[in-house]
Image 1: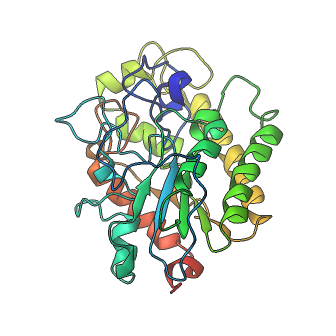
Image 2: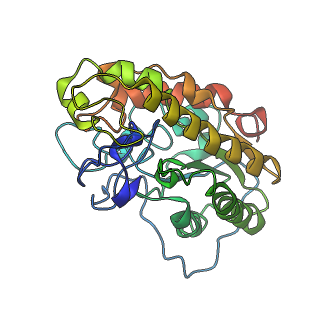
Length: 304
């Protein structure tokens, strides 16, 4: 959700900003009030320079999106910061075994070329700038991973009306990537865990229940800490609505792939969720990476 992220409209949002009591679900991101960590594989070049030339082999990847990809709050010794080394996408922490590390096993030229341009709290409107930064790297990323959606969810009765503008904005950024670099593929990942599975994971923690309680449409628990089944169903319906839009949008664009919604199968345990109840811990990022890898298409996994 971003600076306006709800308290993970289930388990999204950021920890540094005030967590609003709403609740959409799965994987939501961080918030823009948090300073990005310097723990990236490389620094970001200026988007003003011309894109570097692409190479014939898979020797570079990048991720754009929200704090779900930045490892936000996943290092308990560094609260309210990103820990990009723990990112399911580009992190180099062996305990996570990110997509970068798994691809590296069969693509040694990829070593050191995993670029994390994700931004805590971002929504679809910030993806073009992130994509522009990603495409300035040398080598140009052969694969751009996208983790988005969460901060675009509203849970105020207007999500259905938001589908057309959301789809248009998402299509624009995907097309900008594949049109700028003719060898680059795009892989979009879904939100982690269902609303019900997320609620199950946090229901035993009084602090989480308190944070996620209220009377707003997507608050998972009521003021007495009791689960609100209608809110759980509402959240899930909104998640499904956006994911269906992602699937349709990607299907219409060459070299665009999705994970087929596989991250909804993630069943988090309390240890997989960070202290802010909005992000994944290293063990959660590992589960996310395993699912993302399982759905990674052969067109990406087996390319030279």
